[in-house]
Structures are given as C-alpha cells and as structure tokens.
Length: 110
Image (cartoon, rainbow, N blue to C red):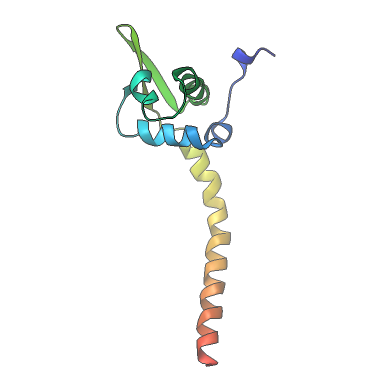
C-alpha cells in the first residue's frame, strides 16, 4: 500500500503531541502553514506532514486562498474520541468515589 493512500483514524492522529498542539492552535483560527510553522521548532515540511495526517483523519480542512493553503480545525471527528472515553468515565468515577470514602474513613480513625 502506498504511503499516500494510507488514511489515519482520529486515535492515530492525536497520538502525537505535535499534532495535538496543532489542533489546539487551529481551534483559535484558520491559519496558513507559514504562520503555523512559526509556532513549532521544526521545518515547514515537517509541519505539513503533521497537517496531512490530521487532514487524513478529518480533523483539519484545508482550502486554497490565492497561492497559500489555509487550515482550520474540524472538531466533529473528535466526538468519536469523546464517546469512547465517556465509557471509561464510569471507572474513573468509581475509583474517585472509593478514594473519597477511604480518605474520609481514615480521618475518622484519627
């Protein structure tokens, strides 16, 4: 399979901290790659590769304005992630409740 035909899912796309930072940056405004690159200690080509992964996952959209390409956040695919994580909140809530009960019971023993 050629590298250009590989599509990334949301989970793969956000696995990289640089891409998470890109999403946060693009959540504020649409930006051209030249402006985006100024926020990262890497080449414009490297930033473009990260943007391509995000675009393949549907997390950013690109549009041509004259000779530049501008990118903006498309948050809808993040709902898949939210739904998946929401299932596990039950376990976190149970652990926090158990911790609270443990701490409160420990105070009574003092």
